[in-house]
Length: 74
Image (cartoon, rainbow, N blue to C red; front, top):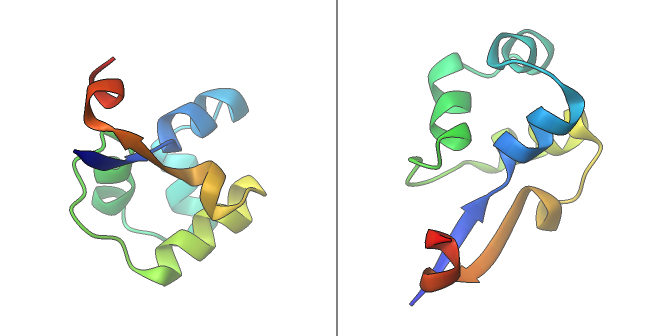
């Protein structure tokens, strides 16, 4: 089975930013950021993706990746 992995926690770690920093700079709600950080989000709107990509200066492919479920558990 294929799943979508969100790399927000890795991007935040690399930039040494906290959820509060992302919230303040992007205007996104803390709960939305936390759900992506913890990979518990079920759906994400395009505006959220755009704001995060702009903030981290990354592509959608760097923020999200499609992986095999066995690899996602690793």
